[in-house]
Amino acid sequence: MTTKKYWRGSAAICVVLAVGGAYALSHRDADASVNDAQAPASSLRATADISSSRSSAPDFSGIVTRYGPAVVHIGVKSAASVDENGDRKSGGEALGSGFIISQDGYILTNNHVVDGASSVSVKLTDGREFRARVIGKDKATDVAVVKIDASDLPTVKIGNPDSSKVGEWVVAIGSPYGFDSTVTSGIISAKSRSFSDDSPIPFIQTDVPVNPGNSGGPLFNLNGEVIGINSMIYSRTGGFQGLSFAIPIDAAMHVKDQLVRTGHVTRGRIGVGVQPLSADKAKALGLNANGGVLVGSVDPSGPAQAAGLRQGDVIVGVNGKHIGSATELVGQVAQLSPGSDATISVWRNGAERKLSVTIGAQQASELAQAAPREQFQQRPQQQNRPRLGVAVRPLSEDEQQQAQLPGGVVVQQATGPAAEAGIQAGDIIVAVDGKLIRSVEQLRRMISQADDSVSVTVVRDGEQASVDVTLG
Image 1 (cartoon, rainbow, N blue to C red):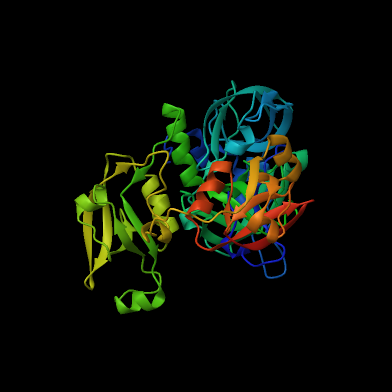
Image 2 (cartoon, rainbow, N blue to C red; image 1 turned 90 degrees about the horizontal axis):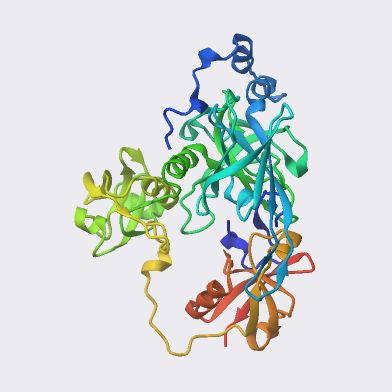
């Protein structure tokens, strides 16, 4: 999760927050894709008979009746620990949601729901409660898989997010604030949203009301199919304000397959840096407005170079699927298996050509292969880099929980440029130039690479503000 770059210059800003709890793909043989012939005819008719008009919302009762029992409440306990400063942190409890994808007890939820858990429990709608095992989790996609020892469980039906359209009705079921089996609805507001340059997830944006505790719960379409996992909200207050975001279920299932099979996730890379293609540039090249992404750099030792991609090419497709943005390219290539062959469609010299690329493996420390524009605009190295003038420490889990923030560092002392800009000891720095700060090292690195000024987003006494700082 991260902040949006249009925070800069605003007096009060919003943050994108995980909607977890008190802590602040293809799966062809999965039972989640059970044949509808196994379902009662009456419940199938209930979903099929959903209708709407300009004056009324659809009737979601058929979806709730058929698939609501597959949505679970997840309770998490964490043990006491000691942070980097040697301070002891007490344990705590959290809550979230999840949904059953196989009759033998595999459940999808969010990584941030179960991360750091010493024990996980799952409660079904029929009142039964089970101790759960964390099979695997992936921070980059915020997907986790847990397992309970049970059989003949109700399951959801997995859908195809690509077939969903902006403006369509969707419905969420979860446990906001611990209120189990809560049903909320709305529409798809946008698709392929991205909140950081290295995120492999093109989020589905909706206006479905979700709140803390909804994390990990399913997002259904009108056919009763799960098309996403509710994960985040964009908020000034920490509560729902009209913007919520879900992980597309195809990306989540791809991660799930790897976690169940190997316990970890590998991602593909092709070794290019890309940037958005402007409408004027696309027109000059003979492409339409959503004609792809422009290759700004090619790793000389990467798969793209070996396949013949060049700087100035426009990537318009991967394995026959259209690419209209860098976010889509990141997501598509990240899901490809290292060592597999893929067909990359590029526009070059007024014509489309197809290149065969052997997918490389993305290293844990590197950005997803659709590099941000700044990555290939090299800046000259300087001996004396500007300084912010703050002494900071990590934000503890208790502080993060209390402030309901997705990240940040605490200012212990402010001098020089920071003090002149109004930053004080006790402030929480949550973003620099709109990018979420998760560690002291990340803040140091960003400031060392900055130009003459930065926009610093801080939280003080629950209020958030963005200030411009001229670096020394």
